[in-house]
Length: 400
Ligand SMILES: Cc1cc2nc3c(=O)[nH]c(=O)nc-3n(C[C@H](O)[C@H](O)[C@H](O)COP(=O)(O)OP(=O)(O)OC[C@H]3O[C@@H](n4cnc5c(N)ncnc54)[C@H](O)[C@@H]3O)c2cc1C
Image 1 (tube, rainbow, N blue to C red):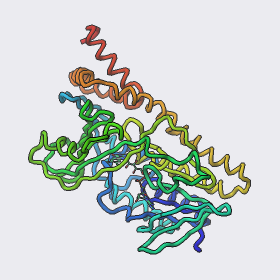
Image 2: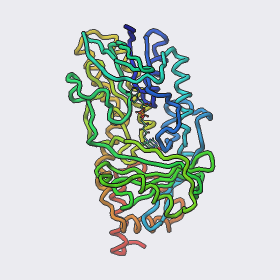
Image 3: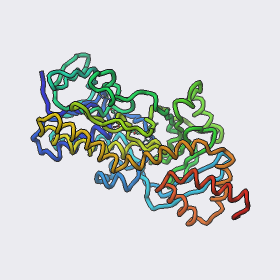
């Protein structure tokens, strides 16, 4: 039986960053295995590929090989089509996620990680303080063991479900949203802008059109699982695309789950099993974005594992496991819990309110739009209050 110090399951942003951080900080002293059931750079990667420039740059050097383009505008459109926007030079990077994964995979190889693709993790078993990981590769099964396993397998973290000793850490499908998009040609798009759509057509979510580095756009929407019940998301996507762009040409359609960040207090780690990224529910509750969150989470997990391995006392190990959660909460979690509460209120904003608010905003000079919308983005819990205040203010003729 092959033995490792750490086995990382899933080579999306969370697993890749965990592996890279571990390899980089331990300089070959640990045996690290990274597994993915597919080639992580195989297209299509199910993502709209937008990430904040500032957050990505704080985590990794931004290599031009995986950047499709930079965007400076973030525009918001109401149901009747009123649009207001904020400007910050190159605030968003549109990634080529396939190439990004490949780039990070190569960095993992450089720091000595054993990287294996087309290797699906099937079962986890706890035995004598170790984890036995059953892996299927090319139809054959193999058991590989390690004291530490990282679940970075994406939304739902299926591989860690129904394991009695992990009660409390496992996540279910109850808090999920669904997102679907098409890469389509013939849809007008300002190449320097991300476009968001709000209102009842995207109840409990939002629609988007993001630029790419070719003639196509990424057009899609995300809605909560509850709101999606009984809907054909595929048909809804086609309606969204063709209503205004009858000659659009679709290259590909792709969809997936997004964990909804609730006021969740699940631990990230137990008995040497660590979670990272979507598997740990680490997403921005307002946008459902999770790329930089997965990287951040992977970095925290990767930094703490060597310390965990260095302890033998179970109480001390529990302390390290708890510390990971605290570090996430300090960095993003507390902010996101506040945002998650505001999201509930944002869902209650009516079409009329979106129209009134964005119509009013669109009449302001661009600098003022930028200043208000940037404030809202920095403190997202202000969104519902601001929309409500503007609507009430206009109704009572407090300002025009
Ligand atoms: C349609 C859509 C659009 C999105 N757009 C954006 C966006 O624009 N910006 C943004 O920030 N976020 C976006 N997100 C969210 C973002 O994609 C995720 O938050 C992010 O990918 C999470 O990274 P991760 O590493 O945790 O999981 P993933 O990226 O899901 O990676 C998990 C990896 O684990 C592998 N895996 C799964 N099961 C197994 C197994 N049993 N054995 C081995 N390997 C396994 C998978 O093949 C995959 O490579 C979007 C999500 C969707 C669905």
